Length: 344
Image (cartoon, rainbow, N blue to C red; front, side, top):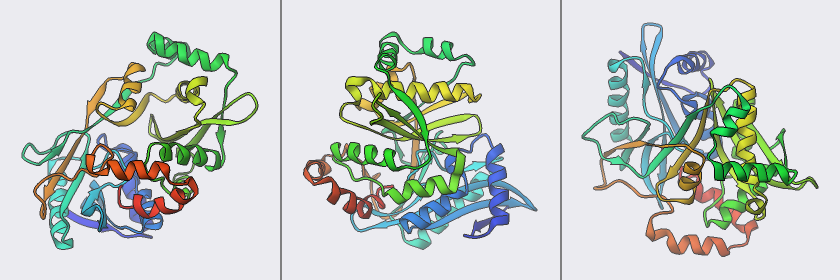
C-alpha cells in the first residue's frame, strides 16, 4: 500500500480524492480535499493530506494539518476546525498504513501530540477525549411528520416563531451571518473566526456551503446559520443570533426552517453537530428529540503526559473568557483571528 501526500494545486489527485470521499461510508464533509485550501489560505497552517493508493485506485484518505502555537501547543491534527476526522478507508490495510504514516510524520515534525477526531473508537489503547458528543437524526420524508417528531415543548417554540411573523431566506453573502455570529461568540467570551474564513468556505464549497438567515417582520436579522451539505446530509455548523432571538423564538424557527427546507430537497439526515456534555447546547439539542452519540478523539502523545484541554470548559481560561466579554467587539474581532487560528 503506497501512501502519498496530496500537494496543493494537484487537481487530478484532488478529483480522485473527492470521488473516493463521496462513496466511502466512513468519510464526512470534513474529508473533502477543499479543506486543504481553506486551512492553508486562511490560517496559514501546513497541511498534510495523505492518501493510500493501490495501483491507480485510492483506498483511503487522512487529512491532517500542523498547528504550532506558543499558547496552545504543537500538534498534528486531523482535522482542525472540523468536528469529525481521522481515517476514511476501504479496509484495514489502508487505514493502518495511513495512521502509521501519520505517526512517523508527527515525530518528524516534532509535535507534542497527534490528534485524530474519530467518530468511532479505533484503538483501545490510545488516550481518548470523551468530552464531546454529536447529534444525528434521520429526517422523515414529509414536512408535517418532521414537525410532529419534535417534542411538544420545543414544537411550541417553533410555532411561536411562526406566529411572530418570522421569515427565513438563503443569503448570497456571509455579511448578516457574520455580524450575528461575531456578536454571539463575543457574548460567550470566545474569539471569533475571521470573516475571510466564511467567505472562503463559500468560495471553495459553493452550493454545499449555505447561509440561512431569519429576519423579523421589519427585515432585521435575528438569527443565522451556516450549513454544510454532504451526500444526503445537512450539517448546521456555525450559528449566531441577536440578543432578542430567544424571546422571539428565532433560534427554534431557524432550525425548523433548515429542517423543512432540507426535507423538501430530499435530504435524509440532519446532523445537529458537536456539543460538550453538560452545556446549554447539549440540552437544546436533546430537547429537539436528538440522542447524543459519543465522539472518540484519540491521541498519540509524544512530548506530553496528558490530553490537551484547549476548550472553554478548562478552568484556567476562566479569567481570559471574562476579560474577552468586556472587550469592545471591534477590538475583539480584530484580535480574535490571531488567537483562534491555533484553537482549531
